[in-house]
Length: 212
Image 1 (spheres, rainbow, N blue to C red):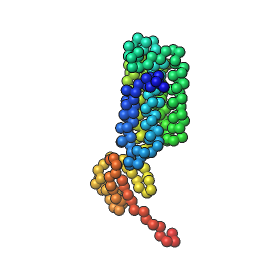
Image 2: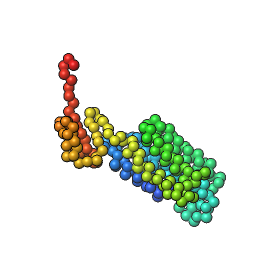
Image 3: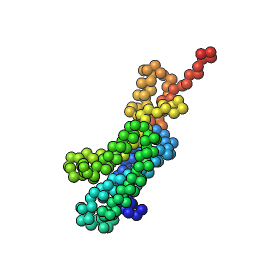
Image 4: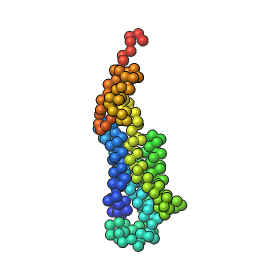
């Protein structure tokens, strides 16, 4: 476990976990969503498993240069050739269960984002692409850190309905939304702001007439 922690670079975990938290703050429509176990599962993934994937693959394919790097003998781990297979199994063991769970828990867009993240994480360092050695691809593949922020935004749909309440992501002010409903002939729709910066449109539920 000590080797896994050193390879995963805990001091760099925030590079993935930080964007995820930013995306979570922008994506939730209510405080209760912060306790949704699926968000917690994603958050856990962007700690050890995702970082072990990014940096572990890097260390597997960078031995020849890493052995000349002094910091590998100080606060990072030098993955020798005879340790590669064991590290590979740990990377697979920590990432595959999440991938399988994600396939059943999240929609197609969120799962596609996960597949993109895994592809970029692997082929940034791994042949045949080994993007880190190619100037343009090196920059393009670094978008993987931004992808972490998109998961909560994709997972939380743009318009969500809960118990008759429609939550709409803010793209205008309260009074603008009220005016839009009035213009649409729905003056009875109420608008209020909810955590953290969402507008909630509440429409009265009409009871069906008797005999209808």
